[in-house]
Length: 191
Image 1: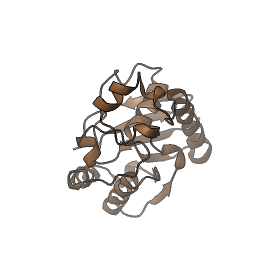
Image 2: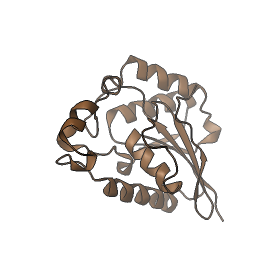
Image 3: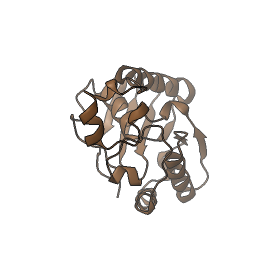
Image 4: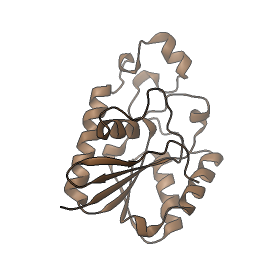
């Protein structure tokens, strides 16, 4: 039985995070606070804990991954499309109050990726990681909705609690032997 470890690191803060806007796949860069958050997080991330860094293709995640790599030194960094944030269709750029006024839920926003599609993508991600990186320690830089979906999948819907936001630069750890288990859920930023 091979042990595989997965750390899910949320990217640093963006201006749209502050404004509580749906970002989705809109490529919004990290702001100065976000860069400082990831720089601080990188100080407590040890190279010995990870074999590879994977990142969503969106700039805020790539920049976060590059800052971690810069701090910990020689480690492979690769883009993984399955780590992409959930698309929110025409809702991208809307504040939470705006989209909630016009739509019953996120699934009803035209062009949005459905919750079920994100759940399927999360399961595919976990399967692919086992296929490609069995026995490795993987640090994956991603986004709030995708990380929530992976954690919910592994915890059978128990974590995270409904409505609880995963903070920027937070790290969540999973471990696989026979099945995936949530080893550490930490919604607050790494410090």
